[in-house]
Length: 385
Image: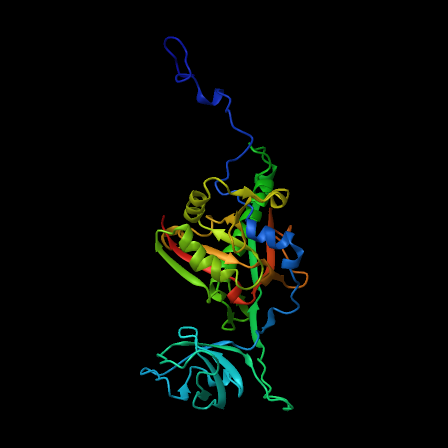
């Protein structure tokens, strides 16, 4: 006997299975971000270079050093001619030095690299000799040579070898064949999982490219490698704002430094808080990069007297109590996505066992990050307002 309903029928006292479900055909994915940095590196072909080995290497070099400093707690009086410096190997006989604090110019007469000691001619110019204190900077202006003299001492820098590893990233997903054949709101669940898996795969790579540390693990039956990320390589221009970050502070401690070397156009990966702070300085003057927008990326431009920043909202990676106040500035000419040959991101389909009544696919990538010349990049931390 069916249940009885007394009185007027309403939507609460009838069989609930009789009501048609009003279900949207789209599913609201909380984090639909397509991962802008990985997309940028792949779109800009110069930022992708195939690796031919899971360990990829590069060389870094620089010109001869120009700056050093005095290394004696008591300092030197105006008549002293023998001085200990931080790096005696930087100097050659007949180098002309200047002490910026006093303006004095000196001539290098002898160099003892073993003891980091140089002897100099004081007041070698128009400015009189003066007392020099510990840690006083010295700048090598150039060199002088006698008329008819032979070749001076030859010095050169030695290239430094750097390396990283490719890392294997896998993002599998699957459904049973029964589930795949069932009609569902939002379309086929397999198609939805494929879209969501692609987003997750890019984010996994992006997190490794930010926070990863280089590691070759041979403890198992087969080698396993982790790639080093940006924060493990960027160790030169790090600045802690310690709370409030003003525009002059940003210009003086970040922009002046990071635009000294490399490109005059940098990419800044910003936490949400940093974006808010910079937008406050710019008073709504941040401009959308139209070229990036044509590829589906939203990148804002911020111009300083030293160079231009391309700001990327990176709050899905730079988040939480520690990283929520970060900004990571990279020189695009010195950062590369390095996929192993034939192993850039691809979708592998039907990888389930032969007897499985299911469909399993996966995204797979084997790649690493190349980060050259840390002096051309910077890390900003501790921004709260």
